[in-house]
Amino acid sequence: MSSRLLRLVVLYGGVSAEHDVSRVTAAHVLAAADRTKYDLVPIGIAKDGTWLRNDKAIAALADGTALPDSLEVAGTAIDPLTELRGHAGETVTVVLPLLHGPHGEDGTIQGMLELFKLPYAGSGVLSSALCMDKAMAKIVAAQAGIPQCRWIEFRDGVDDPRAIVGRVVEELGLPVFVKPANLGSSVGISKAHDAAEVDEAINLALRYDNVVIIEENVDGREIEVAVLGDTAPETSLPGEIEPGSDFYDYEDKYVTGAAKLVIPAPLPDEAVAQVRELAARTFTAMRCSGMARVDFFYEESGRGWLLNEVNTIPGFTPGSMYPKLWEATGIAYPDLIDQLVTFALDVHRRRVGFSTEH
Image 1 (tube, rainbow, N blue to C red):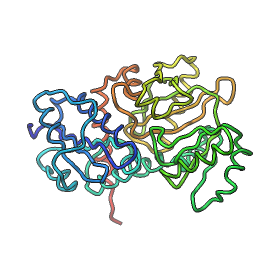
Image 2 (image 1 turned 90 degrees about the horizontal axis):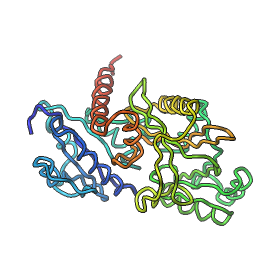
Image 3 (image 1 turned 135 degrees about the horizontal axis):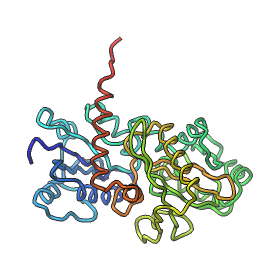
Image 4 (image 1 turned 180 degrees about the vertical axis):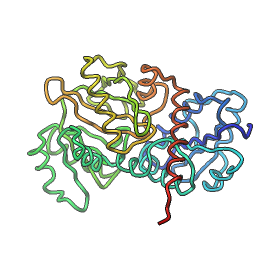
């Protein structure tokens, strides 16, 4: 590849429970990226934390061979610092982290990239960590005046496990949703219909995190908005999820494909304007940058819009909600990648320009 091409490093895989989802996302992003603009370098992180440059995928990209739907984490073992910074002075490198979940979407990789002084797409350390931790995100959302459902936090080793079930039943009613605070893709989430199921669901969630979120059941439509930008973010048309099961779980998202995505969501113009404004306000309150998908519940005859959560590295396959929302709004998949790279470079230039001297 010519050194005049921008070197786009795609990080995928990772050590979280969302490893396989990330492999699918990476394969589709690499297939869609404009090879006349980018020297594409896929780097996978194995479940044991080993970093591997996927030389087979690099060769396929070079000769135009189609990539598989799920990118293998295999190839040459590398040292991250040497590989990521080894081309300094030869070409510009931008990193596109596609690592869903902990140790990828939670600010850890972002902090490493900032120490390496490398531009990267997406939110920074604070925003990534904040949005990954659903409990802290809810606290910030409440402070910003963003409406959300009722919820209870349970911290293992801090809160009384003997009292939590009774408190949930009394304060939230049944059924409830129980989630690990720091995970995504519906991993570890349960819908509990009685006290025994609440206890079981908490124990399941504790396998993934020591902080658990218990939320009231909201009888509302599931609406999502894609956001793109930085200090003045743009929002997409809203889309609606019609789950194929009791709720939009991992099987529904990635295995059966039974869920139906309705884009744009059939909503009155006033409701569309409200949710787009609320998505932008949430994005700004959480200090997001680059991309995020902001998810809401819509109680049409009740409280109206309620924030569900913010995903700073949303699913990015052509069938995922985030790129499909932008396609419906007028931004094609390859152009979306280009805009994320542009924002990454702009944010990096601004960040490194700040003085650290007195």
